[in-house]
Length: 241
Ligand SMILES: *Cc1c(COP(=O)(O)O)cnc(C)c1O
Image 1 (tube, protein in one colour):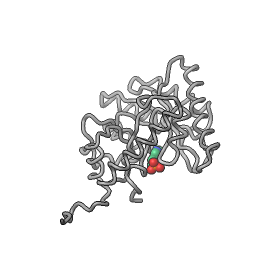
Image 2 (cartoon, protein in one colour):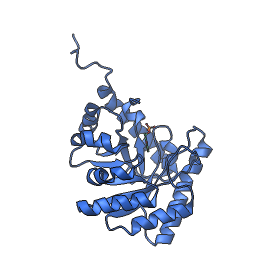
Image 3 (tube, protein in one colour):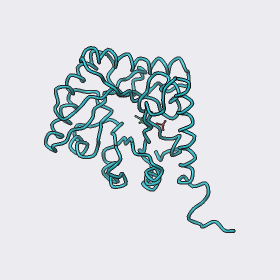
Image 4 (cartoon, helix red, strand yellow):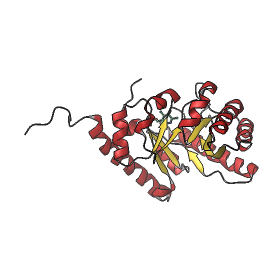
């Protein structure tokens, strides 16, 4: 029996179905442990820097929520995402990319500055579009990471989003510290949840989404209340730099 040369058994495309099954298993056992139902959270496939053929396979396997990190990268291949997919920007948004972002995404998860919120809002208004907004919080204290650093800063950015008729604030997003220590990870995730609860009280309405948990730490995030886990390498393998 011969194996066609263009479909090696260990190609990334074949691995994706297996990886997805493994990630779903991890999500299911974390949900069980947390006493949550699987449909209380969504799996986001972090497609940044992955080749378009892998993204097509992800769509074929039923994935419909994607996380992209660069506006230019999304622009170059946005046709691989079907109309039924939701694509979120999870990487830093530069103000000079606000117009393209306003056309490409159903949500921006990485908002952390009033000026960026205002630029995005103005471009959305011009495009006649309304999208979802998440605010990014730096829960790790790591200098290199984006996100607001204090609750006061969070409130200022939240009020800018609330003032926009083109953005609907859905919740918060964070990247946990780079560690495998349970205590540090859970502290970061519970801080995000506490910030969300406090902000809900202040704004007087509910903010349903907590976008937290990645390939290495999604179990802890689910235990702390995550509603979106953003998974890249555990699904697709390592990325091109
Ligand atoms: C790259 C990235 C992820 C995915 O990270 P993995 O460890 O590959 O799962 C999630 N969230 C953000 C904001 C990212 O930039």
